[in-house]
Length: 407
Image (cartoon, rainbow, N blue to C red; front, side, top):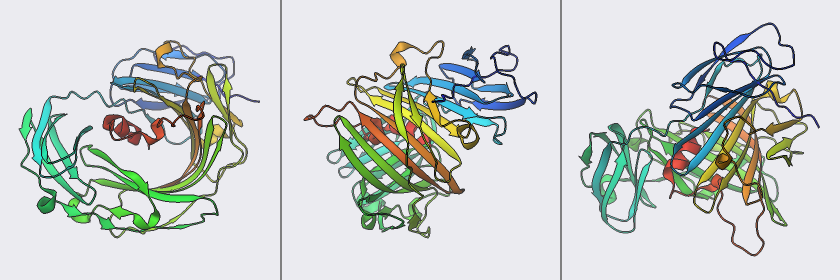
């Protein structure tokens, strides 16, 4: 079994390393972590990981062979996450983006009332009201969008936050608009697959809301165009899942279509991609690997592990792999044996955790598909399954917003 474990060379900060020869045709790629990362490391060819002095959020990287860049973000309470990017010099896009972006100063507060039970969201903050009442949500100063919603209606207020800011009272009966019925159709579903749909929104200035739960295709809804600004991004996903449960393990083979910037006139028919077959997970020392054979048509792969521990901390480690990199071997390891990677950042593989392998294809600027294998392991028989991060609830909206950034 061939394990891909490349390393890297950082211009001006690291010396060349590795015992494989480079191509002699160096190339510079850029890394943007948006906010300050906790750890950055690079690995090229068959050399060792090298850590990079953390300074700001922009890094220039010179490479001449297949490489991996690793970024750890630990800037949000209740979340430990890392990104890895596996690329080759032949990949065209030189920009890598790892959004360690949850460390914006929270200096403002949105204060107001809602005339009925519902949910208020602004930025990554949220208030769930069981009856009419007030809310008090910390949020960054500046322009923001405040969303109020219940099961039937939605309102969006465009507001300017400057310290404690009073929001005019909201009444969904008069200020809101009803969600629009929007049934969806799917092509290529097969017998036994469970089809469903969900939607979410990321507003112009970053308020995120995921509308739970997923529903049958005929029960889909949309936010009316009149509620949305041009820069608001309403997203719709249609999925078909095959679920199988074994002793302590639950496995889901999934196919999905994701559309961004959805509006009332957007096509409501969805064609599923080909299924992912022959992929398997394995534990390699303290890490996890995935082995695969022939893949559906794809532009990139994603391989990740995650865990929601008993203290409510989410551990999320994800590897984004280009098609050119994946073509160099049939097994990829999510290697976390990085100098400076703290033991408390690791997932306890002996406890309940999830692992995923996703093959993605970009069909257009606003549509991509995924053929996936998800697996939750170490489930205790006879006990209720604890919700894992792939279905994280709205009680952790900031974490949900971070996960949404990964798409």
